[in-house]
Image (tube, rainbow, N blue to C red; front, side, top):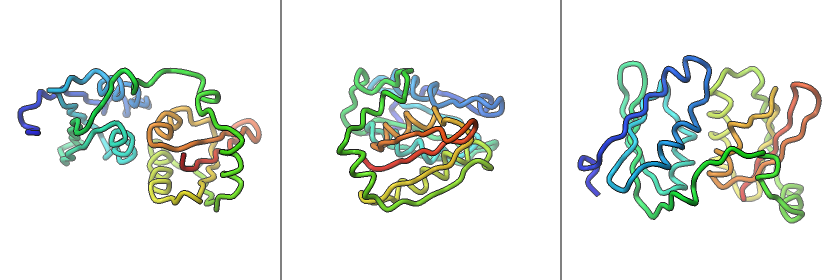
Length: 181
């Protein structure tokens, strides 16, 4: 595949990030609309490392370039990609994870690592979480302490092939367990 021949669809999310908005749905919407002869040219203020894993699982590779004011990342299709089966749907994520008793038994036997992300500024909690889980083995789990229910994390975890369980400990305190599917 010659990447230079692909039509580039540009999406600059720096203003979204500056305004405190999470651009993940906007990015996934653009990815879902790409045709076979198109690539997404994402302009971001930071390198979106967790996004690389999510899109790799959807058949995308990337080229990252450092530019003034951030990064230019070109995402292009490399494998079979069925747009209809990979759309991000805005749903109630507590029911979306669909784990069963076997999943809970597996979680009970996992070796846990715990992190507290309450003091980190966005997008650092997401970056830190993906740095850890990308290297986790099948017998490991990550226990996250967070100040809110991280609804923007859930679709990323699902797309990257992870299961998760969120428990509200008290107001403004959540425990999230993450393990490999």
